[in-house]
Length: 433
Image (cartoon, rainbow, N blue to C red):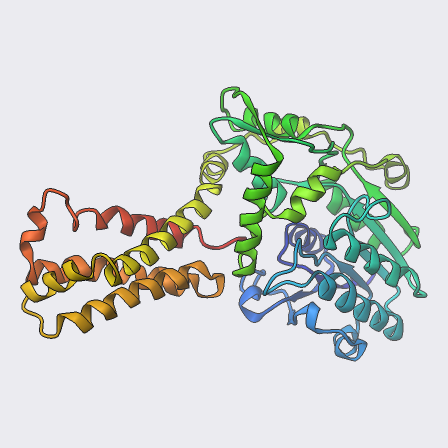
């Protein structure tokens, strides 16, 4: 019996990486997963050994060499869409990747499978595609048995990135039609994973680049139509989204990215959509024997469950809910500091609280801090819990100090209940993957 190959896998928590990890384990490969942090490792199977290391910061081969002892092959599924406080396209796609490739050459790990992106050799409209191409070139220069896979837009039963966005857009009352969107050859996650497994075999061909694309060229409207039928929704009219409106929405996604969030709706995606995602899968099929599955056939093979329908309907509501909460808490604080300051002090004085002015100011500042914390991804969970505690604390205190507010015809205390439920929804859907 042959000894199982030991594979180092980066991007093990991502859409492609997690599926590759599952396939490797099912075939009895030994896997060492690379994740960004120990917290991210909590999403790995309990018995998978891991290395907690940020690729973007591991820019020297010496950092990687100790982790390559006993490794037979390396699969790189790490990638980021756009630069942000937590993400660096250059760090992940070029500097960190090149250091790891060089370390593989020094350590004698010859088989390297690199997951890149389709079309980067033809056009590089964004930092994402430019850095992907630079990472490819760094690998090609080395004396390794490298294989570069260039998949088109990858979708699967798991929903993240493009596949999640397609579901969310398909659930809207109307289907948004983005002006200038290019054609897409949607490829199934299972087909990509099977390709990775094929090229991990020691006898598989090497030193080549392969385009992985679906069998049909679809418009974005057609893709959303397929997902809408899969979700069991009636046909909806397509509404053309003018470029200025799309740029505004995607620009708002950039702002969220600066705050540490990773929304798919960012200007990188808008530019990549305009370019499209098409290729020639004939060579891929000839080498591997894998015949790409069409989007319609893949969706029909696995009917949507209630979980998929719920996820699709809630996907685009999540950022709206967070934005509403940020606005609510910051706005209430600003009102209490400005035009509502006299009314706030009067209520505290009526409740018999001494020094109502300073307390009213402190409460207003607390609201602003809570809203600001929710706006930033790194502190959002803490901010949401603080908001929930305040939402419970305000009516509880008023019950003892100002019970008449429960009879107020405008229902200021009763209206806290839906806010608390919105906070609970945001907490339940906060994780990105």
